[in-house]
Length: 96
Ligand code: H2B
Image 1 (cartoon, rainbow, N blue to C red):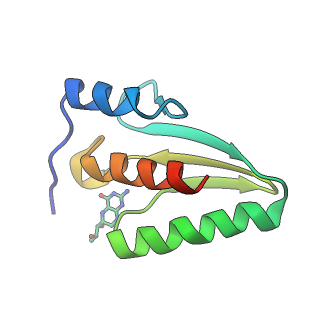
Image 2: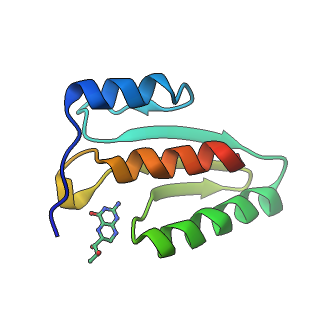
């Protein structure tokens, strides 16, 4: 199901409130990197994000090595960024 892509102004306004997130070079995704004390902390965090993703039907692209988690958010159904990516990034900011 298609969902609206953010306008450049909406995207920039959202990013201004998300200082830990960077716009990917192609402007179609936002990215962040998180460091935890150890794997237990990292995977606990990932579990909380996974439960959110399942409920919201919106899923992160992510990469984990031990205590590091890298996350890319984009909306495939929008071919770019949507409000769903912003909502997920805000959720992540609340628990990181
Ligand atoms: N996650 C992300 N990141 N983007 C999507 O477009 C998307 C998704 N679409 N999770 C959902 C699932 C869609 O494939 C299902 C059918 O609702």
